[in-house]
Amino acid sequence: NAGVTQTPKFQVLKTGQSMTLQCAQDMNHEYMSWYRQDPGMGLRLIHYSVGAGITDQGEVPNGYNVSRSTTEDFPLRLLSAAPSQTSVYFCASSYSRLASSYEQYFGPGTRLTVT
Amino acid sequence: EDQVTQSPEALRLQEGESSSLNCSYTVSGLRGLFWYRQDPGKGPEFLFTLYSAGEEKEKERLKATLTKKESFLHITAPKPEDSATYLCAVQATGAGSYQLTFGKGTKLSVIP
Image 1 (cartoon, chains in turn cyan, green):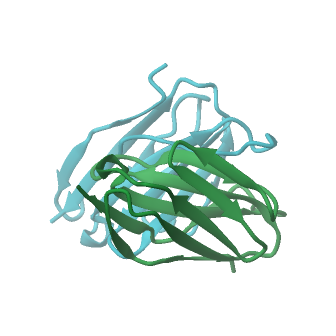
Image 2 (cartoon, chains in turn blue, green):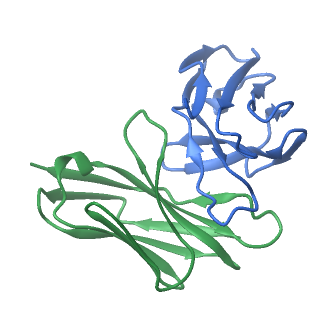
């Protein structure tokens, strides 16, 4: 199993450009989520999904869109990048929202810089 | 609003010098408390889940404990390879309980 994979590892964007951060998991996990990690702020939840076709907003959703057409993939879209979106982005997944054991497994991260 | 506060922000230990990291939390109802380890440039790696006060879990030199208001991560005789940032997170019960609330972490440095 590859676990949770993310691409790209690094990305530089200009203000106003759009892009999609890719996330995939091969563990048949129902729950997937996107976090951003900024110095001094900790991990903050952007969007999450509890299954294919179901998504919802987290703590900091503005400027980001998500969709979940398959169990395996959960892409994060930046429609018009802003310097405030410079951050490290992590995708995570866990087995089931109903499972008694709810630990999330994280991908290696995408470091995004917006100039 | 769920809150997680970790202390200290940074901790330097000599190899073999045992210590504890603290995670204080405020949550309406606790479904689970999680500890993660994060190495520089990597994603967080799951360590433990604790569900109820009094519970303890161990893994090698690490032992996590839980009370109704805080959790401790005890590190016994640490080695340089234990150097990392340790993150604590809580998951609440009830509506919206899919979300984890993370603390800012404790950066641990173990000096040979």
